[in-house]
Image 1 (cartoon, helix red, strand yellow):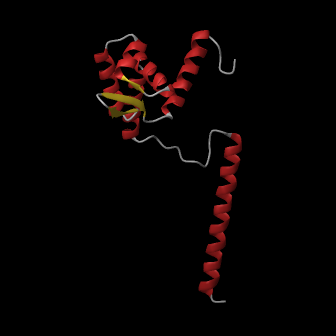
Image 2: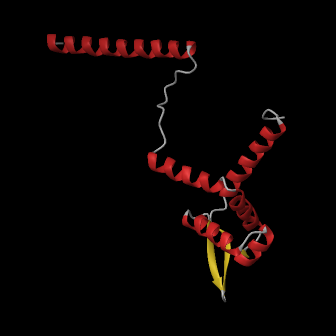
Image 3: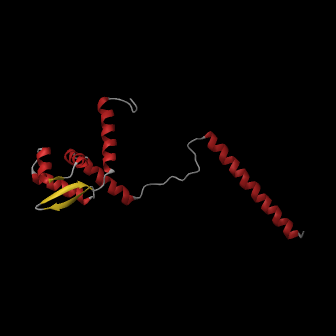
Amino acid sequence: MTLEQSALNEKTSCFKVICITLIVIRSSMEKRNPLMTATTLRLVESAKLAEAERIFKLLSNPTRLQMLKLLEQQVLNVSKLSELLGVEQSVVSHQLALLRKHQLVSAKRVGKANYYQLDDPHIIAVIDAMLAHADHVARGKQHGQ
C-alpha cells in the first residue's frame, strides 16, 4: 500500500467516525427533546393559503352553508332554494354565483331554469367538521366529550 492510499484510507475512516458520531449525537438529542425530529417543517404555499382563505370566507355565511347542505341532499333550482331558505331569488342567485366562482357548485340548464349541484362533494366533510367543532364550543365541551 502506498503512502497516498494509506492517507486516503485514514481520511475515509476518519470521515466515517465523524459521521457516526454526529448520528449518535443527533439521536441522543432527539431522545432528550421529542420536538426535535429529522423531518423538515414546511409552510403552505401562499397561493393555496389565499384560496383557502377565500373559501373559508365563503363558508362563513350561514345562507351559503345552508345552500351547500341542501345541495348535498338534492339538485335544486334557484326558485326552490329561495323557497326553502326564505330569501329572495336575487340573493340566492348572487350567493350561487359566488359558490360557482370557487367551484363549490355547478349548474345545469334544464329548460328555462338552472339546476345547481355540489361540484366539490368533499367540501361537505369540511363543513361537517366545522359544524361538529362549533357544537363542541357551543356546548362548552372538550373534544371527545
